[in-house]
Amino acid sequence: MTTTPRIPAAPITGIYGALVKKFAGRMFGSVPESLGVMWHHLPALKASMAYGQKLQKWDTCDETLKTYAHMAVASLVGCSWCLDFNYFMAKDKGLDLDKAREVPRWRDSDVFSPLERQVLEYAEAASLTPPTVTDEMVAPLLEALGPAGLLELTSVIGFANLTTRSNTALGIESEGFASACGMKPLAQPGPSAAAVGSRA
Image (cartoon, rainbow, N blue to C red; front, side):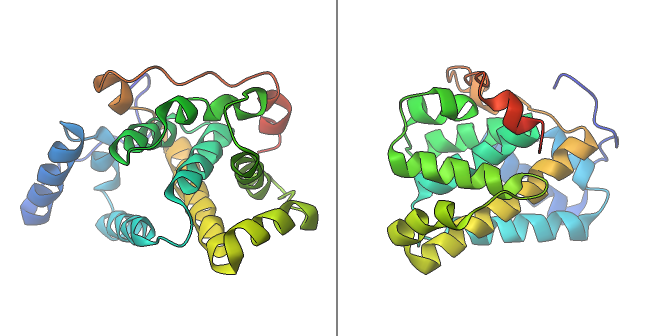
């Protein structure tokens, strides 16, 4: 991490703590400091983890689109932890890593399909303050994904805003999951991202 979280990490203890550390060790190779920060309020940690696990089980919307959407929100908000984590998880899910690493500069990249670009634009528009989603933006997504798929995508975007904004407020930054696995560095936001990001 490049900075210290605004709330110091607490010791992860107890039976539940042992389980959490074992799971984190298997997934990341070490226990993320962010878990220690959230350990101060176990109900909040458990609720966030439980909802995140439920989201992972939904399969109406394509996993690639949901991952790119979460990364787009993380890039827009400036949450390096979520951006790095979702890039790392893209490898675990077998997604196209060359595309995933380009999400921070998607507007200036030519690797994304028209549907992927629509999803990325929708994720940003839904995350701006105030949101800038339009009927014209939703119509092609509704046709491509169906009502249930679009609702699932929107729920993922909403959860991404919860996690990215919480991490940013708490000073939780990337812990280098992707680089520890030898993955290429994420692309830097392109020139088109500056004007959009100023409204997040």
